[in-house]
Image 1 (cartoon, one colour):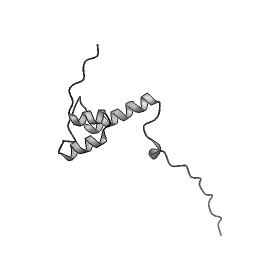
Image 2 (cartoon, one colour):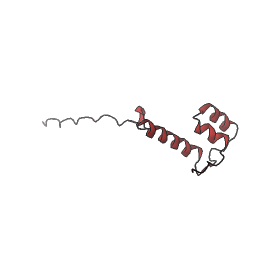
Image 3 (spheres, one colour):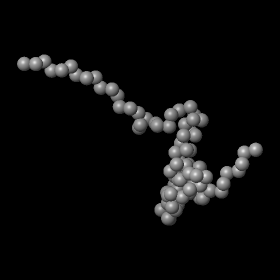
Image 4 (cartoon, one colour):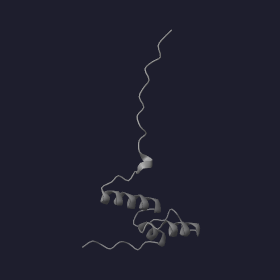
Amino acid sequence: MIPPLPPCTPAHQAVECEDAETLARLLADGTDPDEVCDNLTLLTHAVDIEGDSALQSGQTSDGPHHRRPPRLRRRPPAAGP
């Protein structure tokens, strides 16, 4: 049997549910962004959720905004005098 998850804070629950609006409100109201639940901060929890989603969908999690820039061809050296 899988052990139950530890009880998490409302901020971690917002991360788990991918509820950015609620998370933003909680942080604006003073939630500690470094709080830890199940050995994860809010940031590492969000990264974990993103990675899980990418694995389950079979896609990478880096998205189009993280693609490598296209390779540029080198110009041949200019002809000398």
